[in-house]
Image (cartoon, rainbow, N blue to C red; front, side, top):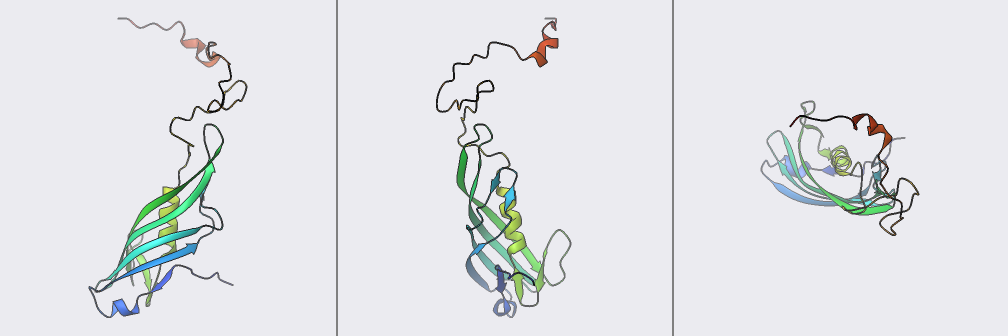
Amino acid sequence: MSRPRVLTVSVADLLRRPGQRRHESIDAVLDGLQVLGSQVPLDAAVHVEVDLESLNEGMVVKGTAEAPWVGECRRCLGPVKSKLRTGILEVYEAHPTEGETQLLEGTEIDLEPVVREAVLLELPLAPLCRHDCAGLCPRCGADRNEVPCGCGTDDPDPRWAGLEGLRFEE
């Protein structure tokens, strides 16, 4: 059994009149929107606002997609949540060019692959709770955003010991 196509839009009225435009606003829950450390929650809807414009041989879709996302801070491992907004610009044709245009299936266009790709590309690979997150102490594991741990960083990293004797001429 195939799953329902939640972002399929009928464009029969537009295809009969090239140059015509129409606005669509759709909310859809898409599963599997996850990249490394961030994801769109399973029950969260992606909000899609697009303008459709018919051409002689196809359709242009231009607009935005918005979705909430959650993740884990790469430095302190705390929860992070925010909202993303990404642009959509795609051409649909009856005979698409591989990697350039999308398939116009009769009188319908399926926005899901385009929206899915746009959202996945906008999800942060390594989210931060804030730009100046101090992270966890590598010695005691304390969250340095909440309390100073008191561990010093006086000991040099032994992996760099081989460079101690290196001197450059001036």
